[in-house]
Length: 116
Image (cartoon, rainbow, N blue to C red; front, side, top):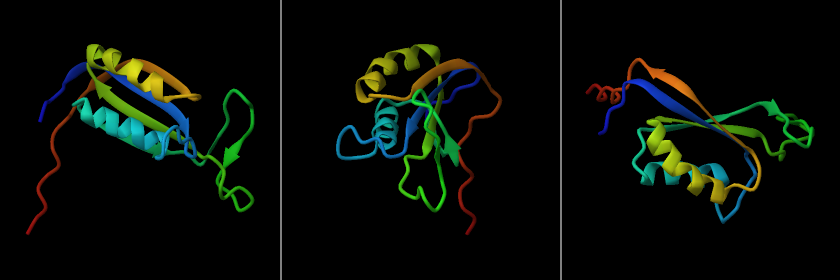
């Protein structure tokens, strides 16, 4: 396992849950790409509501059970590794937003083994 510490970069990708450029959801395509490229790790967060450029609110409610809820993928790694990844992510996306910002890694370690 490759460790990271100190000043790094946070890549944040905003997409809709229902986006499927291929046969699988976009978030899964990106997550698998990040893993295959050997980045330190990634997290997918599901939003309860949001809107984008089209100004249409997507939310989790009875009327909109099948709405495209907002998802945020976060990846922290070195600036260089993320810059190499960006064109591959851009090739998958047809909408959404991508941001980069500085992140200070305080702790990055493997999970504790399960107790017996």
